[in-house]
Length: 220
Image 1 (cartoon, helix red, strand yellow):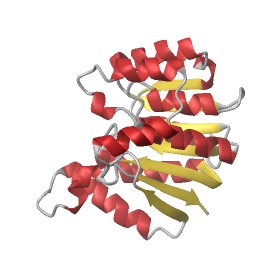
Image 2: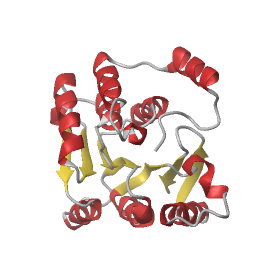
Image 3: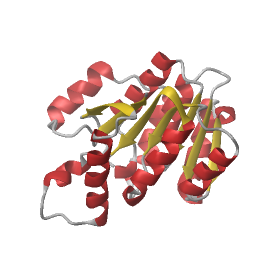
């Protein structure tokens, strides 16, 4: 959960944004409001949100799942990238943070594309599987509690179609993944997840050092 790409100093990061970031007025307004919050660090990095939107356009994606909404900045970027008949199911448990999201989604005119599910994400994902939606999702983005990364990944792997992509955030964890003294539950879960996906022959992979590290897994 970092608002800037790891390992770039502020000057180089500002340059990166100056020559690459394209935000709509609605995106900028949501980013600025989010960055005034106590937990602003949870916002998806701007360059990462744009990168995922580009992936969605390149794939011709129409169906997306997001696990972890926060104030909906990443959701908004993906919704703007989807065609008019595209849909995102986004999972969160916070009424307070998603109320901000809803307001800005409405202002951007994309509310009809977004299905917000306020419930534990595993419950929502299991309901989608039980509803026969396995193999129907084009793109999934996982950015929620780290101790459930593997269960989220397994559910998404069932729901995503062959050739679809699962993107998992925070896999570099601010560098803590390589600190042997860090035995925090979240850090241990991320290490376990990274090692598991590295050896998972059901997917093609690339770990992209954008934001706080984005693991991409393409379902074979």
